[in-house]
Image (cartoon, rainbow, N blue to C red; front, side):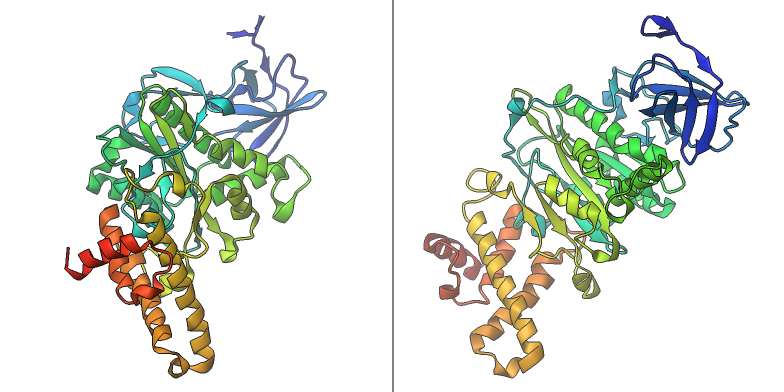
Length: 466
């Protein structure tokens, strides 16, 4: 085996083991990021990657974990290659582990290519502007926080909130209108439980969506270090499907908090100086290397759209993981514990949600001419209704005017009829129709954010039952 121009050397100089890391003394002619093969005393071969190189020591992270490694007899062989993954169009419909090996009992992937999991950086000049509407079938997203092809739009959840159900629903329902079947989903699950994994498998199998899904599955009891590679392997597969086979790929990454916790664990094992809440200072940069792999490229018909999902510890949106994610991505979908307790499903809190690219993907020829106006009016009316709830808690509902009571009623109906839809898929036309039905609770003169021509056109249709 060649290493550059030299024959590879087996090192039996493992100095010590710390967590998922091994420290190898006196290595020669090695480079940062290259892979290593770790041969255990019983002949088992594990894969690792060089994390750091000091004067006379190399730090290697072991993807399969360090259990059973004996520092006296374990040997390490450096390959001279960066971590690679076998990719093929036949990955669709397969369940793989965190580093791309079959987990479904099927045969190994016959590779069309072997690609570096770090991906190829996209020249900013070559990036194309996201501009096409993706219909998720979920009203609170399609109408108010529209997902656009090539966007990265995270879901901020709390412990126990149904983010996984929402992710599975999006994976099953997402489509680009008028585009046929060149749409695929790459689903990367990091640090999830067996129960969560079986839920996703059941959902995808029952709906028939599994045949267009590539499922990367890293369970909670799998090695921590594999969790670091999982989103990168998934995105490498997505890039291959998008830019080689011209598919439009939706990448769902859950749970990014588990990923960041793994990053913190490895940083601690390396004895690095911790940053906020113990997370490494370079976490922002690390997350950017994942999130920025979404987008469209000029001259290429394929695209990658990302929906990362993360759990906010203690529902704290200022926690480092959601905080840094919000800086990098183009908006966020926020789940609300209060709405969840009310039985709203999905419990999407419309007010703190945002899609920065929404205006690029809506309007005539994409969704409908009245979409922007309807979204603005829904936000304004619901926000006023929510403010009135706080006032009612102080002065009572009897002190309100008739109009204010209408706004209170609007806020209640908005949550029950518009946001809450269960497992039902709604087209964008159905979503906008529900919105116009809600507007009938308010007098026309209160629809200040909608053009009169749209009020005349669409209000008449609702009243006449059209």
